[in-house]
Amino acid sequence: MIAAMSFGGALSKNAKIALAKAATMAGTATNSGEAGLLKEERENAQLFIGQYNRGGWLNTPEKYKQLDAVEIQLGQGAKGSTQQITKAKNIGKDFKKVYNLQDGEDAIIHSRLPGLNTKEEFRELVARLREETGGIPIGLKIAATHHLEQELRIALEANVDFVTVDGAEGGTHGGSPTLQDDIGLPTLLAITRAAEFLAQKKATHDVSLLATGGLVTPGQMLKAIALGADAIYIGTAALMALVSDQIVESVPFEPPTSLVVYAGKMTDSLDIDRGTKSLCRYLNACVKEMKEIAISLGKTALIELDKSDLLTLDPYIARAAGIDFSYVAPEKQHDFFKSF
Image 1 (cartoon, rainbow, N blue to C red):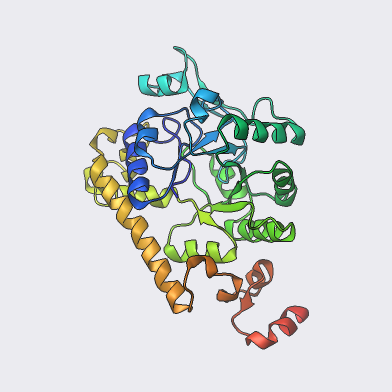
Image 2 (cartoon, rainbow, N blue to C red):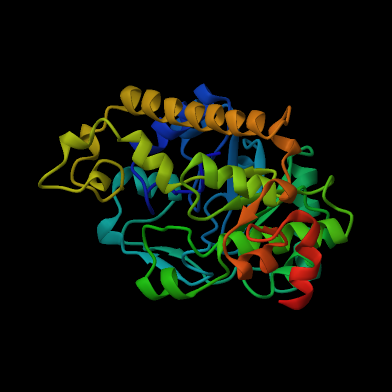
């Protein structure tokens, strides 16, 4: 699925439209990010996940009732749950309209979701959103930290339909280098711990685990699924695939990101239809390669993959992820870990 990348706070309108079109063409979903409801994105997305966010821009019934799923956003891997401000001078007319901002008003993402201070209030929010939207899936997105299990416990108590766990490798347009480099659990460990907790609580079949954060290649995506993720989000990889054959429009004087970020100098040069086709081809190629691996493993579906299909050269990863260490025969794994 296409990860949460907001219009205005991160991407241009053309980029968001192209992402929505490509997701629809490939038969998958896209995510609004921490933004208001962009009409053109909703119209072009067959499956549209919207974030009930800390800025409050998508948090009214008339907006979230138009969604196919609601993701309550409390943090992200590359930025934790810190405050973010987009100054009014950097906000254009389309940005202002989607976010319902007044002239001269900054766009502020708060460090916490206003009005949400206890687990009881979180349960009430989930129940209210489910009732008001007519029963569409309601989920939680968090940055993976060492307190992951405590947060998942609260999510289960609130009867969420899915949990999105964002690992430390996740990218962002607006985070500081220290937040991006030194905050959060790595994606591999986050998926492993989340999947084990859901299994322990016998919630694996009731709550979907969505994983995101630095997943770029089909092999990485497939490993995430084998570790226990039901689906994965991709962000940076999707953008690079989107502009893959249009980079010549920007280089050597401007970076490829100038074609897609809201403040980019060349957003008008992005060919939406061309980008849509490029990203769709990438998404389909990823699925095809994952299917080929599944066939090689003797599986009939991607969902059949699990930890028994994984090996590692690193004994520490083997122990942390609960997968076999490749230097030791399968029947001797228990003895190896016992002595490790």
